[in-house]
Length: 248
Image (cartoon, rainbow, N blue to C red; front, side, top):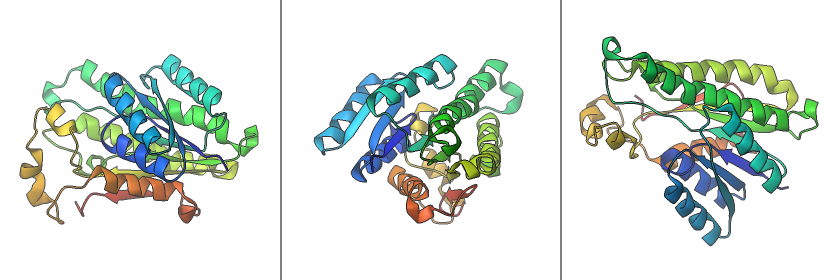
């Protein structure tokens, strides 16, 4: 059976680890990226060199026109969609709520929440057995920030991930009878380049005392959880939110 996966924001970090692991497990992979074409090209080269099948499509998931174009590319190239990983997300440098402007909030929610809804909508339209699809699975990438609130740093980001948790629970119930499972992972501190991009490359050293396991996680550890949730091994799991956070 041909299996196709879309990983949004698939060129770096958790998305890249997920795309590579999915290809190793036999998925044809479509990765979306917003800006970094070079990183996306490197991912495609790595997957195809290992015998996998992958494409990369530039798309800003906060824009409906880009999301429609992204899914049309999947339709043309692969003809079907088995799995969606809603991974694309953004944050902004640490700031207290009293110093946050509306543009920052709108940008974070547009990508993290609206983008996830738009991609889920298009995936459901293709997967739903009520629409002639074969069913499928969706995994949303949330964050342990949704449960911690990220005070003094990223309350807006944490709130956007709280919305993803609620979306996961509600959507799972809405589409279960249509043959679609919807779950989420909540990563904790994962050692990726996002921390440097947010202006704090040494964040792990500061956060470490708050992590019971006394280490950061890896993108691969999150990817392995995502692939499990998408697999038949998790066939009776829907509406679940799995923390990958070292006990934090």
